[in-house]
Image (cartoon, rainbow, N blue to C red; front, side, top):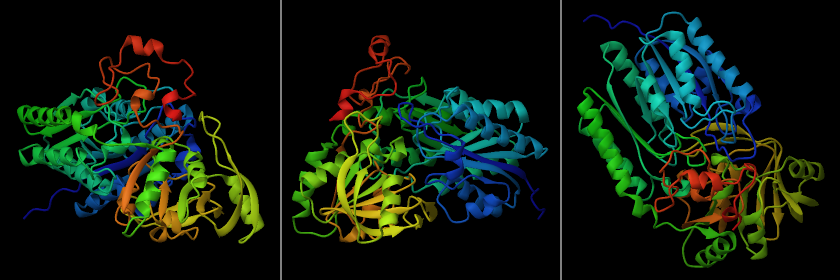
Length: 525
């Protein structure tokens, strides 16, 4: 049996989920640090960086080993969701990726680990522009595949330039490495067969609040099970992108994408996914969100009932995984006002308070002006006296299903106790999606009655197994639960801002506030 030819493949990654209404942009330093992602990695160092984490590049590199590719790892850069990627960061990273791929010489294929919802200060479609420049550099004949987040705001231009793509099917994203592997296997198939699949692209009609997109509950669970059946019916790859709703760009919103040997099969798969999504609109309306005070009161009632485990409250409007600052104090104020006992909250990013705790030492009482963010109407620092319960250098290994072993460095950190509430205070930002992010400052999450997590959905992967109940709360924050509360001006005409919401059009755009730094009244509940 003749040995298969060895394929030469370049691999690169550039990930950012952009909330165009958020207060803080993603500069080059944000990509260097990672903020919950792997810090920026280049060349051969990528093998070690992705050896045991849950990211698309990890799965692709494993396929590269299995298929005995000659690999050219170029650059991987990811930053925590925020406002736009700065022009400087976008141009430097994009130029380095393209230069590295071009310098690799003749290639059999290219694998990209992307998000799908990147907006730069000067470019609406970050991934589409990257692909346009890459195609100009390598030509039309080199096959390119990509792994993408299910929150991607995928453009028709991007799909036109890619040979195949695969989107996540879980939210919380526990299948990131699996998705990278699937996209890499498609690349191997295309390289060895020389055949490019047919593709189909469909846009759908409505946005869904982030917490209610979870695939651990209906209708998201059923929708993604439905996507899998399309491949059983003949599609080579099928993906549902629910979209990231806090992006004021024409391509914001849900799409279905399918690849198959024939155009008929690709069209049938995309149509099937789109129809199921449209039919699910009423089912998304069954979920409830509470105000901060209501959530704490309800959590106290449920925690007092027989059973084990904490009641977990998602502080969804300050989710740093969607552009939040992980510093607002609405839920903290509600916990203290309700005299909650056995409660913990994390993370509050406040370097000054963390440093004050380190200077004072464990057991000391310190006066702090904790958290708060000037960009968020209705939010303010929480002025209090707190007891320093625990100190940490901020280094931890996040072992839950979402982070999947990623090492985090949150800088000088502390547990501050305010009445019956323990607060995990850090110097750097990351989404609270792993129990180790409480444990590293001495808080044992399994032993608490109430937990408040600054996350919308990813926390479920590690916290749902210990939670007796999960509630979604809306305190003032940069990421409104309801997309209809955002002052959109540039969406595509006719897109519904919620499953039962108003449609975007010229009248709504004209009425939107020109001040893009503030929040609407609905966010201030």
